[in-house]
Length: 451
Ligand code: PLP
Image 1 (cartoon, rainbow, N blue to C red):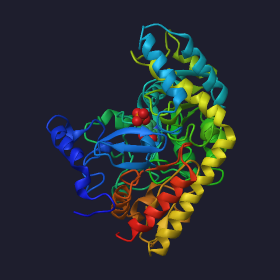
Image 2: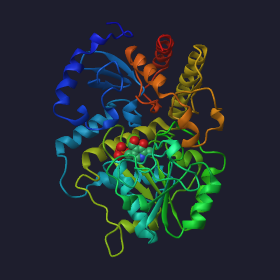
Image 3: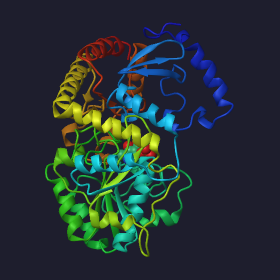
Image 4: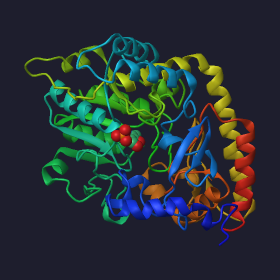
């Protein structure tokens, strides 16, 4: 059967493997985010190897990668210096249950690069770093509740899985939103401990903190809403957020799992010039290895030391030498890439977003491609509402057409361009070249003619 340049019969090994995996693994893979049907009518794609910006699957098909490990790859797949650093550590051994010099060296690098970071601790995933940050905030302030925003994803702990992607009709008013768990299994007691308001609305946040600021330990946010279409903060909103949290003795936790080392060397906090009390890094910090970090203000971070009334911070694999070696090598590489390298990456990204916009609009589609800083989302829209007026989940969610994106993404995969499924973030990495952008734009012309 013919479907794109890669016909359905080009995936026979992937299909065989998927059928075997279905017998052994629920959803046939570990994270449901990469589950079945992502690139229908293709089967799940079994990638075998990555080199720079290119991937090869088990059937020998090759792709230019714009999924970038769900935003975790910033320096390309397997840069030599990082591979060497990890191999060196493999030869020494993966774990001795003691500290080691590179842990301190890497924390020092983080504290130098991240404006809001006096001290750093490492952990394996963004999810765990968020969990620890929220506990730390409760211990530090002596308050119990946390406030998050509708449409924000902060990993998969119970606390974070409230009003992530709720159906807007079920949400009630912004002032008094229903708390909708993202999954079965979130306890009612957790829902009680989490408050939510729409993002990008200073008045609603101010009212909430006036009413409940003495119960709320922390506000957690991203600087851009990266998991719900990449909406940007309105002018002054991040400053209001900082001012209001200070006024109410509430800690501001900035989730930089996506933005960190993607929006430049100093994270979204450098990009927007904001001062969080705590911030969380993961993904691009270690360029594909499972290493995350919780960083922040010294007096707050010292609450992670052992002692009465302090917050514990544990983990057999927290700060594991293999992944810290990967993070260290990656941060050094990014440092050498420098601002100039990020400027080149942004330039290529802008060419890609502008090219997509022209091609898709010429083909008769309404699209919205939010502003670029290392990543973007491609929305096919219903044309019934002006995207420049979209500021939160309630605005964007009813007007985007996920089904058309999915058809487009599958067609692009068929042309050898690996895009994220399900309307996720499309990412750039330093390993992309101008030729990769040209190829993606050519593929977009071909793909959209079939959608
Ligand atoms: N925070 C944000 C903004 C994320 O996008 C993610 C993951 O996608 C997380 C936290 C959780 O990180 P991890 O998947 O490493 O647990």
